[in-house]
Length: 415
Image 1 (cartoon, rainbow, N blue to C red):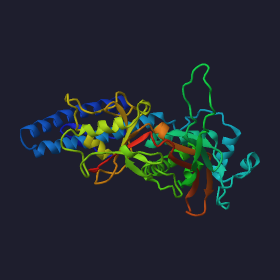
Image 2 (cartoon, rainbow, N blue to C red):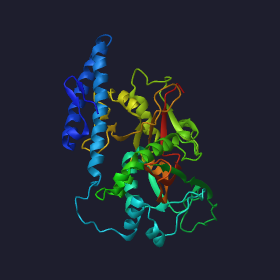
Image 3 (spheres, helix red, strand yellow):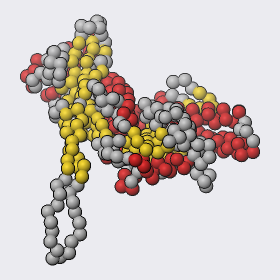
Image 4 (cartoon, helix red, strand yellow):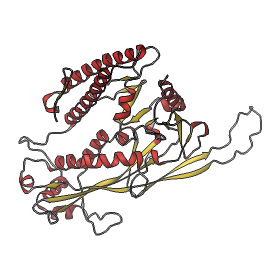
């Protein structure tokens, strides 16, 4: 990573900091950002803003984003297990030892004796072996840390290809009655069904012969670290804007409707009142409207979701008392806060433009469901890219909205 100096503020590589140093540098940058932005706002009240001051605010804002990424990477790196065993004799399960033998040399005799060969769903010619439970669990934990929507949504594991979830369209008729009043039979509830099919997601990391021959390298850790970024990137995009065709359906793909006309099956929207941007006056009011479009029961566990560019715009806003609406995380590893609610940064959210919905707010744990089919499979391929060995790694995942009342969108449009 290239170092950048913004008026004496440095953005350094993750290797030069420990976590506490990085967090301290991040907070220092945020204080400098507030001072410069206050100067810009003061200039706006007197006359047009000084171009140099505006550019300084933007540069510090970019440095703040960069330092936040460094901080997140350090927190993730701290949570990872060590790649090297340091000579410690680790007790392995029989499955793990057999899987490592397959990974290193292609010897699958022990795996065949432990487990039947796992044929992939829908394409029987693609074989593979299930990774050990520890490796699958490690991949799942890393995806939760890297994938913004997965980290705030509900996650359910299934053993079948499709999860079918019933929901009530109309509940049974109920009412108050006196102690001796007749109690007529109530109407039955009407049920419908949501379906969440799981789709195949794959990655194909490559290894050299020297890596596979090095007994110090933990191959479980290696395969987890190699596929985490590929899986998280594809999942992140699908959970937000996926069309449901061979991928999960994202919450932005559902029909959107004005909150005043909301109906089940659609995502409610509030509006900025200006095409493509926030209003010049009282911009925070549209955010307040979005917060209170959500019912009280959902606000207890609500999160904002937006990309870095939108977050940089909101970072400059203040409330009527002069307090910044955006606040940095209180401790390393936590999320930034916007108006008292955590903010999940998702780069796949759209930028502000006429008619787009770059800001989502809601209880995603109740609103969005991620479905993981148990089992991550690996197929060793030493032939397709000689002299490298490819590891065709697949998992099956689905997703979609399960409660349409739990997620609201802010549309940058007049109405």
